[in-house]
Length: 139
Ligand SMILES: [Zn+2]
Image (cartoon, rainbow, N blue to C red; front, side, top):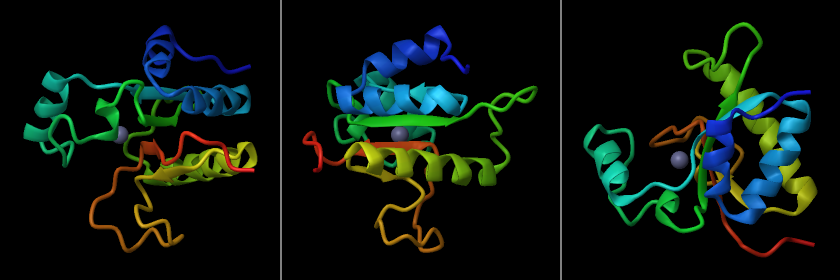
């Protein structure tokens, strides 16, 4: 059975309980890693300078406490995180979105910001990014 590394667990612990619940469900049958949970001011502004985030602190969902944003991706056997294989991130996103729906957890994925199901109309791809849209569970 897949397991999170301690680093992944620490990052997951900084996220909203609904995100934690979702990603604990996902790891049961999909090996994955958590890259980012909460980000403090310094790190957020560093990522902004590097062009890795479009937002300055405190405007990112990662700056809230607990974090409303989470960055996660697949972990492949013998390979690790497939950074150069976007298709693996698209596949993983399908798993995440389906699981979220099943749990009634409302999230948005950085591969479909406007949530229209079209991944080709993006102004900025952030394929590892998911954010919680509501702290209430949907019925
Ligand atoms: Zn993110």
